[in-house]
Picture (cartoon, one colour):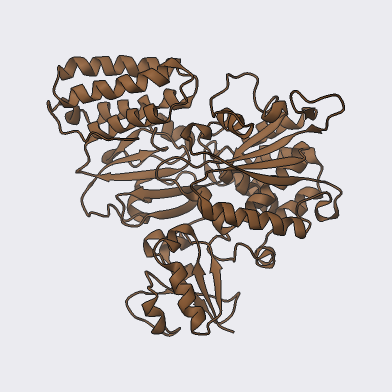
Amino acid sequence: MSVWFVPKDAAAKSVGADQIAERLIAQGEVVIRTGSRGLLWLEPLVEWSDDRYGDRVGWCNVTAEQCLDVLPTSSDGNFLGAVDDLDYLARQQRWIFERVGIIDPLDGDDFLYRGGLAGLKRALAMTPNDVVEAIVASGLRGRGGAGFPAGIKWRTVAAQEPVAHAGSGAGAAKHKYICVNADEGDSGTFADRMLMEGDPFCLIEGMVIAAWAVGADLGIVYLRSEYPDAIATLEQALEQARERGWLGANILGSGFGFDIEIRIGAGSYVCGEETAMLESIEGRRGMVRVKPPLPAIKGLFGTPTVINNVLTMASVPSIMARGPEAYAALGHGRSCGTQVFQLAGNIARGGIVETAFGVTARALVHDFGGGTRSGRPVRAVQTGGPLGPYLAADELDVPMAYEALAEAGGMLGHGGLVVFDDTVDMLEQARFAMEFCAEESCGKCTPCRIGAVRGVEVLERIAAGDDAMQQQVLLRDLCEVMEMGSLCAMGGLTPKPVLSALNTFSEDFDRAGSKLIVRSGG
């Protein structure tokens, strides 16, 4: 029986994927909705096979009108041939995204057929301590930006006793939590969303493994409100997981109980910081907590809490299924395994690239990304989100790995790369960083709250040619105060893109009266 595969990822839907599916169904075709393969410049990417689990051929940039004419033997302009053989995909090493774009994300049988739960079954056959040590041995590090070893965090939580919620009365139930931060707020990043929309059971499986390893009984996914499709998909996946015994009081007959719920964020960027996220989940304004105590010891509601990013937790099932040694063998130095890089900005082929750490920024931007969409030369690439520094066009041979990138003045962050061509005004980009911080600061500490506002003012004076050289000195002093005095990374990292732009692209700052776009919002 022939089958059509049409993505229902938010990016594909935005360019007409739903209309394509409706047209094919109206023509009597069998249609399966999947996630996106991550080749976003080709969406809607529609695939066909003569069998649900057979090899697929694909067409790119399909419209609903074309569905009347598309045939499996077609070789017109948007026919791609065998999708798995496309160079963009064939050169990747997909551990986290191995099923995304291939399975129906809400079909549990499809998930199982493609290797789902293999990691959980192996973990449940091991002692919790052995699972923790397997994650330590794998070298898995947090994919949210800090790069802290996940296994060490798990080991700390496992060593704690469950605790009743702070303020609970005598005899109250005692808990440990697994919290997944899905508040993906960095510009140019979208991997968390695509994973949750394309393979939500993978995230659930990773959370169950983590819970078994550390002795947690409750899990929360803190999901940004701007992701309605991800929210809906994950909610349905959780219901199905409970029905199948993958969540609940007796997971897979093991006697181990664990459940997950979703909490929706209110759109605050600073809630990407783990303690601000905890504050938000507890019903308060998202503001950074002073540490210590660490969340691993006193986290959500005062209980020991594992906090990991979506991609960190989604790495766990394949590590357990394939073995920590295989995972640790991939990568570059202390950066083990694979990273999901996200290519965005002025780039010809934007999308997802999952490959081992150590690939160069040049390979990602030019070999995978095809250079700029405008066709003009690359001038700068920002790594690590809106508060990450810039790499110049001649600095792109740096390996994309935590330590190597830091030594080159870059930052890995969540794995996003935003590309700019030679028309970009780097003074304006520096101003954007300060303005972004002023808009998104939680306001708890003075260097961040006030410093970012003063930073915008200083940059505007530089742009206007108002004693520009002296203002540059003032800007450097201000950045030092913010970097050294801010309570969290929001204010501490804002100087990174500002100083990076100032040091690497000084000509944009030296031009008195340089044009500056004055924004009305962040």
